[in-house]
Image (cartoon, rainbow, N blue to C red; front, side, top):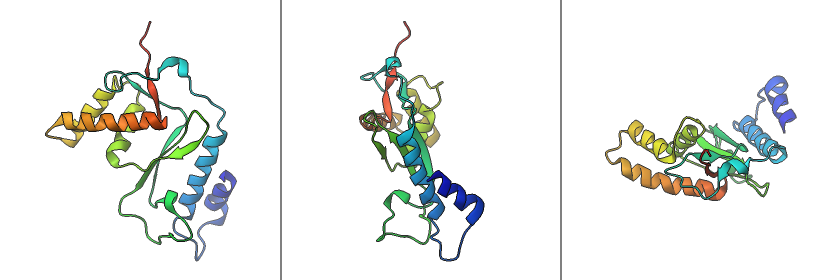
Amino acid sequence: PREFLQYLEDERGEGEGDPSFMRELAHYEWVELALSIDERDPDLDAVDRDGDLLERRPVLTPLYWSLSYRFPVHRLSPRFTPSEPAADPTRLPVYRDLDDEVGFIEINVVTARLLELLADDSIASGRAALEAIAEELNHPQPETVVSGGLEILEDLRNRQVILGTAKADN
């Protein structure tokens, strides 16, 4: 898939009759393969798998890529081939779990921002990330963002995008 993607980008260019989503689909397929053959393993010794996602710092798997496409590449099929991009970008974290299965999740802009904040090691806790989002949104009830965000954090942990929380320093 990477060779095909490079061919599309560097040699072939856009041809008449090419689907508008062709390069994005090729990139998505390459990412799936790249994650499936990545030789890294997450360092679970540094992670409390059952840690409190609000009060501790959630740890993302290193086997995760945050992607954004103009087309919903994960839904393309012979029966679904849109000619125009979607109104909003399609945001897809693509990841490999501990059983070496590659998966993806379609997420909204708020969850994408949460993942962006969690990727920054300076964030002290899941609560701090969610409170930052509530402030960015100028949300009148920040605790609503925090409680809804906890559900998202738990779902991401269940999918193994979040491995757990950073272990306390000894």
